[in-house]
Image (cartoon, rainbow, N blue to C red; front, side, top):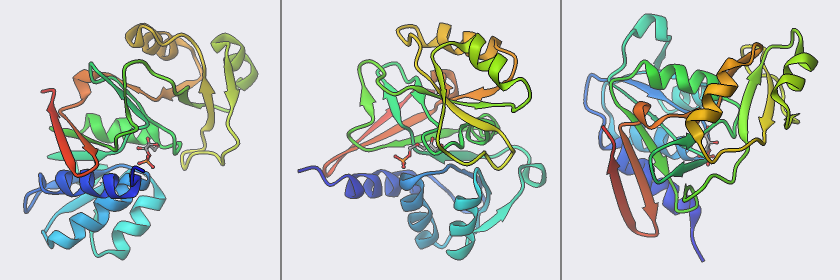
Length: 214
Ligand code: 5RP
């Protein structure tokens, strides 16, 4: 029986080891990031962090990590986050926790974007639907343009966005990402391209696989 929490903690420790004293660090959202926050706090480094969600910010502060705004910190040295799935080429589906818009902004603001994964996250072909954040204005029109989209039973994002899933064809993730970005009313979608990803750290039991993409 796979101990997923132990795998998440192992991936998080390996990712936290990449952070150096004085760095500006982007923090993702989710249960793997919860392990990262503990591992990072345990290292006792002097780092300044940007959070992608109120949840992450609260926990980070409670562990003694300094949290500032992206406006204050500007370019980040590293951002670290979990993922819902990662394919063999490094495409990600993120946003299970509804935080993908902020997560993508923070990943894009970082020189190095490190993704942590337990053994259930690597896939040959995506099985997850793509999380979407949508503007409330014109919502039914946006949903109808998207086709195959359903609202999620989640509170709005901290930025007021409505959260949905898109269940369209993902055989070509770049084409799907381009389509989703082309629909007015889509704030952002949870497909992250390999060009954005520097490292994927995968825990399988006690083993760590470190894939370097850039
Ligand atoms: C949140 C995310 C998370 O990184 C993703 O859902 C993975 O979460 P977990 O680490 O809990 O498995 O994208 O928006």
